[in-house]
Length: 198
Image 1 (cartoon, rainbow, N blue to C red):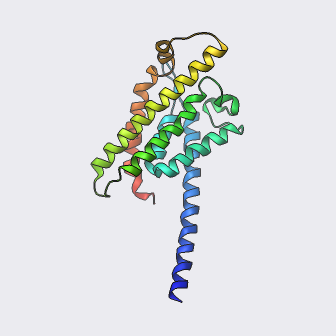
Image 2 (tube, helix red, strand yellow):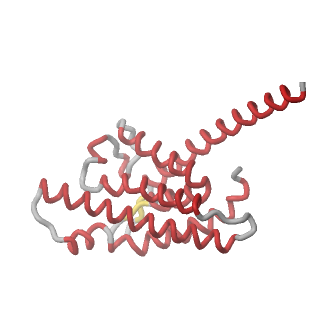
Image 3 (tube, helix red, strand yellow):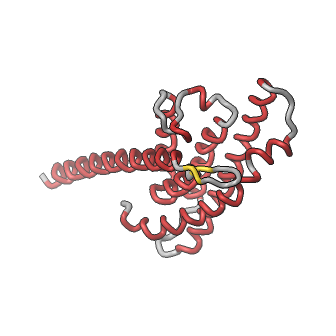
């Protein structure tokens, strides 16, 4: 009887965990969507999309964060207006800037791998922060690289030749400082809110 009761309790706990995971994944995808709609008017306007990606990964962890990002991309792929400017559809992902959106998946995968292979004890917050910073910075660089390569391919196919330095000046350099500031803000918020996430 004790074993049966224990098995039943574990099954209920597993169901609750699964339901909680799905809820967090949905919330993560919603946060990325909302932040994608928010445009900051600067010399080169930018959204809070990358801020949301950083925050979701820091708060939900690599696995749930990756699923949130994948859910967000799939929502956009089927036509929901979740991308910047309330746009959606496969055409956005296959367009010149679609590689940067798909690149968020690489950011999440790198973050997941770092946090799995470099596990830290609960009390070692400094080492954990260092690992997370390295993971997000490397993930952002890979996202930049993938998105830039994608942009150059589509641009040269549809418009004409474009040099790497020129494309970087269009698509990467103006966003480096804002993205780093968004990363810092994500860390501040995550460290204040993380304790309530199971």
